[in-house]
Image (cartoon, rainbow, N blue to C red; front, top):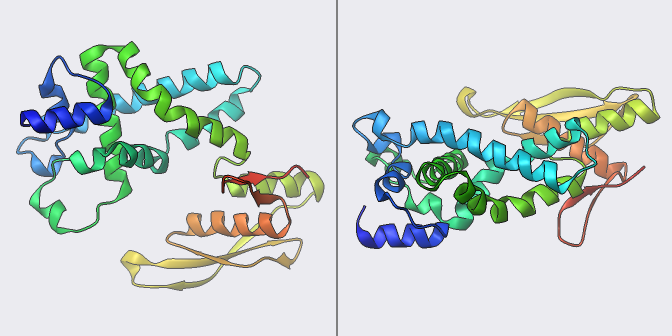
Length: 240
């Protein structure tokens, strides 16, 4: 990593490394390394744990009245691949990654790549500057996602919200059925509909059965007027 690239990376992260080599390693994907031990994979492993710890600590401090189950839901959303990829993209970490020729030739990279890079950079800061430096780096990034997950009331698990509502109010359980599937075996899409006490709701397509079920549950909640979009464009569960 040359001096200009290092300065750009440190500026984006808001942290100056005493040992720039650990920063460089955190941005080397396994596809660009002759030795996987020299890539960022080990750092991803450590960073995942540090990210989880900081997130749990923040949730514990921000919401002193929440029980373990609710805190776990918020944590799961906050440290999800989707959220981590968003944070990485905001920082530009995804653009800093050193990739092998094969990865570069494949075109658009999956979000999981950016999410893993956030974990490896987190570990690099932890190793270089300690836990306090890592906490200072992560807190402003995680805070809006933690609060958004708590406000939403669903933490992206629409199936859980729908099941809880139907069991409590109707003493019924939603039933999901695959009504159609398209595409080759390696890239199938599924159309799933959910029915509650015989009433079928609009089906939704997803790249996996699980994704289609979540989208179908979300649509059912909207049709039942239990889910709405707030002023900021976020989905929020409406109290029944």
